Length: 179
Ligand code: AMP
Image 1 (cartoon, rainbow, N blue to C red):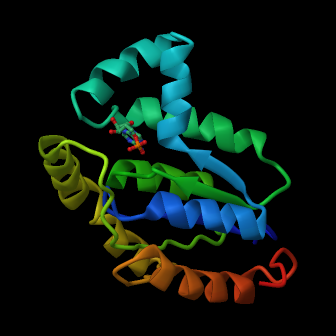
Image 2 (image 1 turned 180 degrees about the horizontal axis):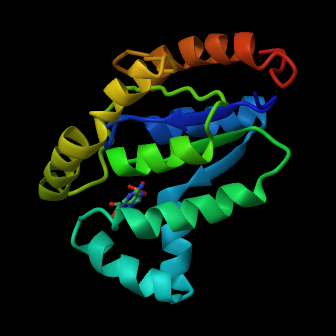
């Protein structure tokens, strides 16, 4: 089993998962991989992958699984000696299965929260919520069956954060600070 802590954060669009992620990084010093950020930087650099991904992103669709799995696997391969937090990946069952194969036998944890973000158009919020419901939410069952799901419920980040923090402090004693 890996000595590093490997964490996935799941949460509906607008759920405040970005806020929780940034607090986890601030307090626990893991490496952060955001699939959305990685894609946006590929789009800006106009790489082949970026050009392909852009069409899906602007249409509010998910980028195909094979593209995502390749992108994330390559990034994860670069992180050899630290714990990490994956944010925005996996978003579908095939992505989760690919990640699981990649990381077989190691520890993962997921968190979920439910706060709404204000900065988006109603129709794109609806589309992203529908995608979350149909493609990403079922991953909770996938990780529950693997026995590695942690759910953190609440109606705002400040309510959820102490629970996440407490959980991580118990699981990341070496990295947790005096908070
Ligand atoms: P995000 O910043 O996580 O909301 O991602 C922005 C956009 O990138 C999403 O709306 C998708 O089009 C795409 N994207 C990010 N992560 C994934 C993923 N794991 N699978 C497929 N598409 C993704």
